[in-house]
Each structure stands twice: as structure tokens, then as C-alpha cells.
Length: 374
Ligand SMILES: *Cc1c(COP(=O)(O)O)cnc(C)c1O
Image (cartoon, rainbow, N blue to C red; front, side, top):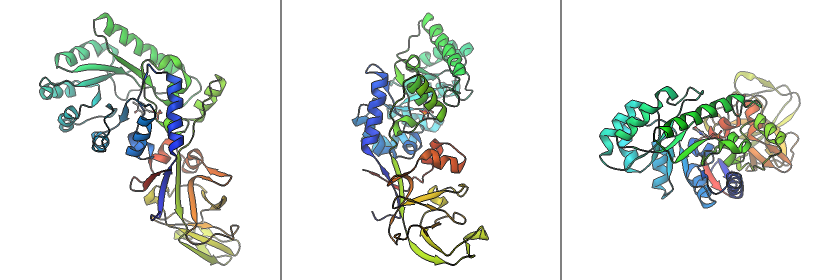
């Protein structure tokens, strides 16, 4: 490995997570793993290929850029775009045969000008309480008719839960689901029957069979992480705990070892003063790579042992205390996230240091850093 930092992706873990999700949803449901955010930091192309090889049907992306990257890599599976496409991106989306989420009239009218008889699949997003994307039930009939009259094929209808992973109380999610079903019924009573109906993200898929409908869009679970502790607890309470395998290990190596006397400072701002004669290792990663400057008392793993970061995190460098790891030497491997010996820095632990969630932690690992399938 000739980079200073790299990310190893456990192919077996990704494969097993997808197979697990398949066994939960059955064969009749479209399994559409979300690979937005560089596959939650796991590498867009590499993760997508593993998912498809192990039974995923579609791929969910956020942007045209991601969809284009996948098709350029030779991926032929249906691609569903979850995010907004600008007017100037729509022609390319049609020619790439993407399916897109749709929720505003302006975009429908623009597509009407562009499709010119070509088939184009859209999925209407229903507003059920998230107040992000979505068409309200009061406007749904007019909107669906506009889509049909504009020459668009309404292939799917979807909604997104606002409060399914942030709580062990799922009443709000079920209220949303009720509105979603009412909306579907209203359309069907008016002769608009839609093939794919979908609402479930990871938490929905892991917790409730009733919300899986005939398509699911799990993201974080595909990478072996739980959407939240609440989802984990609910899952255990319902006796449907699933084994998810974290797939990502983020590594670097030691660039230098130095001895520092007692009562010396380390790093910018003199924020750390040694309390003993210390051995310090210099690691060539920093906040540029996604090793957040705001981390609260983080440590890395060297040879299965913890080495705490001392002083401020720099743009490209951190300093860690290896006084208790006497064997540590230049070029030794350093684990920033993942397992080393019996120790494990989970994305969740890293998220706690960063005051955020596991999603943000893995997604923020700089895209430039190489992802390697192991
Ligand atoms: C990202 C996303 C998902 C996946 O969410 P997870 O919590 O990662 O499973 C599903 N649906 C939509 C619309 C999304 O944007």
C-alpha cells in the first residue's frame, strides 16, 4: 500500500449484509441499496458492484454525477435518483434511462418539453410529514394527471419517514404510513395504478414487515451499521435482531517516532502538556482527510493498543501518545476506525467523539482516499 492513508472494505461483510436484507424482504421486493455519499464513504463503484453481485436489484443515488459514474463503470442495473436534478440535468437523465423521484410541477413541465415520446420513469414522492420533498395528498391527483399528460411513466410512488430511527416510539412513522396508503388508495380509485410503492429505509426494513411494500431503500444497514441505538433496541425488543457486519476499516501508518520530555507542549495552541517523559508518534492524516478537528479525546489503535491523540488535530498530521506501546515504530499500521487485535473503534464511537452520527463519520472520510476491497 503506497498511500499514507487508505480505507479497507470487507467484501464479505458487504455481501452478507445484502443477503441478510434480502432474506428479510423476500424475493418479491425490489432491493435498492442507497449508494449516495460515496456509498456512505465505502466507495461508490466498489460497493455497488458487491451489492449487485449479491442480489441487489437497483441502486439509489443522490445525484446525476453519481449515476453517471456508475454507468461509466459499466453498471447496467436500474438507477434511482433520490435527490433533486436541475433543469439542465434532465436531458442527460432521460438519455441515461434513470428513474427519478419527482415532486414539483416545474420539473414535470420541463420534462414534458424534453421527453418527446421517449419512455421515462418517475417516482412520485408523497409528503406525509417529513416536509422535505413531496406532494401533499390534496394536490396528488392533479400532480399525477400532469405527469401522465406530460408523457411520463409513473413507475413508482414513495415517501420517507421523519422519525423512525430517532425514537423507540414509532407512532409518527405509522401516521405517515397511513397518509401514504390513503394517497395510494385515492390514486387507485381514480384509475392511477402505480407499480412500485416504497417507504422503507434501513430502520423501516429492519423493524417492520408492513412498511416494506414491494420496494425498499436501505442505506446504512447495507454497510453493516445500525441507523441508531434506538433502532437496535427496538429490534431487540421485537425479537428480530439482525446481524449486521461493519465493513469499513480506515488506516494510516506511523511517519515518525520522537521522545518528548515531561512538561513539554504538543502542537498548535500549546493545548497539551506532557505529564511524563513520553514517546510520541506522528501520523500523516488530519482534518483534510476527515479526521475531524473537533474530536473529543480520540484515540487510534496501534498493534491492538490505544494511542490517544495529543494536542490539536492539524490539517494533515496528528500526534499520538505511544509511551505504552514500546514496540511502535515508523511505518507501523495505525487504525483510525475499525478493529486492531481485540480493540475496535466503531463508527459509532468515532461519532460520539465527533458529536454526530455514524452516517456522517463514514461519509466524511475524504473521497480522494483509496478504498480497497479485502
Ligand atoms: C438516504 C435515504 C435512504 C436510506 O436511509 P438509511 O437510513 O441509510 O437506510 C432511504 N430513502 C431516502 C429517500 C434517502 O434519502
